[in-house]
Image 1 (tube, rainbow, N blue to C red):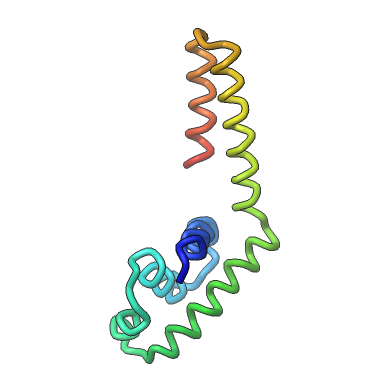
Image 2 (cartoon, rainbow, N blue to C red; image 1 turned 90 degrees about the horizontal axis):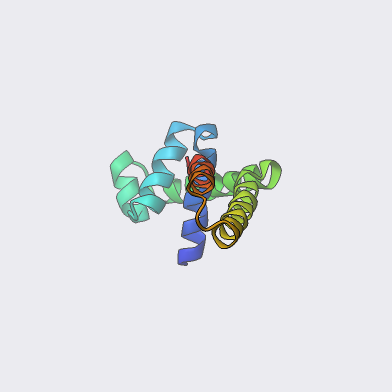
Length: 113
């Protein structure tokens, strides 16, 4: 699987994990985050590789559907771009204003939590 797809699914998982079942959470985490093979995940849960594959396919489709409807990741990316623009502007326009730099850093940190 390509790295970009894996990275995207891991990010979507971070946003929408609470909306998934425990089994979906377990399979996604082991397969995408921990990089276990289908066989290793299947062995962990005493199910077939096909069962793991089917669950992963449904779960990843569900993550994409959540993002399509709720836009949490897309909105997060927009906020990050805007925060970076503000931070760059402040660094260029107000390089010695320590309080302003601290406030922007707090906003960026809040967004990352």
